[in-house]
Image (spheres, rainbow over the protein chains, first blue to last red):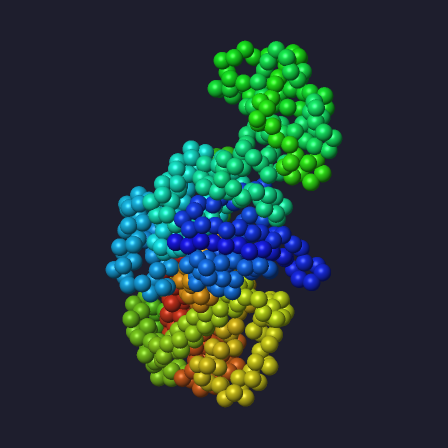
Length: 334
Length: 283
């Protein structure tokens, strides 16, 4: 159990003038027992940040501390962490038991204790009957659980997850997400979880770090990130369908952009006049794609309510307390 | 696929049977010759059915009969061959594994130069570098020793290259997982890389054992005492000395058959691994 503190963490590839910066000074204080999700599009540096915490990438600048101890120059094994890899990285020639026990064997933990720990982890993850199998004899979901088991038996201070669910099918992913949440409640180990999937981020995170192009755009609870996005990027990245961003909203000051989520627009008899382009039925709700002036916007309505048709002109009214104003030049929230 | 027709089936079988006969007939002849007396073999139509002298001939070959140009028995020559082949094989595999490990997983100055230097020696077979090698071995006083027989043949660009290619296919995440588990480089090598390479090792073992066993030119140059002759040289001496009449063909053929057995045994015993190593990698 430990807190993690990132102080002005910088990553550059190469050196001298040819150095390419990929992380531009990340600051974050992560509390003990917290579950933090780092989310962002591919190439935003989220995996790099995680690998720097893990010790698999060198730190070009700043400090990373785990449990108050600066770990910049420590080997991964000395940082008291465990990591679950995207492709699980199980040792193909070892049984499930040996895969989970390998790290402990190297640490010279007594055999009896290794057995106790592995059995306990196997019980939590329902792997008990698979301990003698080789990884290639397991399904994707089972391999994923073995990878988690390998992390659990080490009883680390911090868990690091590098997109561990991206190789699972949709159903298994949802199931594993719940298992990870349950596991975190039981063990209470500080966790960093990297993903590009915003649903994973919203459901798992106690707090989330939204990253873009090597910069931390926002650090907050899922509610904060959803309801008060700090920038245009966060507003458009989190939420599906994305927030409407109107450059020419009625009554707007020049140089500002109005953001309004599709579910915060109501079809009314007066209000903004929009032209309907298409309507999609998604089961419980409909998405109305419309244009207003030069802006495209999406309105979310209940499946039961009357649906406009393509080509119709309708009126919509935004809920006044749900408007988000952004500076068009900086992209920041006003 | 080609359509099945009786004619085609017959034709393909005929071709295969012919092929097998061409390959197998000399072997059969050697086997037959090793079961007759020396006198029976040199008679005009050579017997094509096995005779009754098998036991006597093999005994003579194995433990040395006085009559041959050499008084070294085949048991001893086969022992020399076996030790040579094993040392070459094990040495080659060990050195190649380690050098491939260094080239793939470590950053050191002149790494690419090292790799290309190793790679270039692929083009230099033993025969090309045999004179300088002889000079070196002679200066080191290694003539007529196992060291001299094996050391110059141990370095292997082929095996290094093969292991390098295999190591490159091992996912980086596995290396990182081992680092997280606290495994140092040699621990990773021993616990992960070597077990993963075992099918390649088996395939190389077969190839290199046969290579070592069949060495002819090098031992011919560098052994001068009979107790260091490998069996391949022994055969040569049995049929090469003196006139046609003085050759004990029956004993020579028995020796040839005996010399064929260990490589055949290695191939048969390791066949499963060998094929696996050539066709798939366990990942």
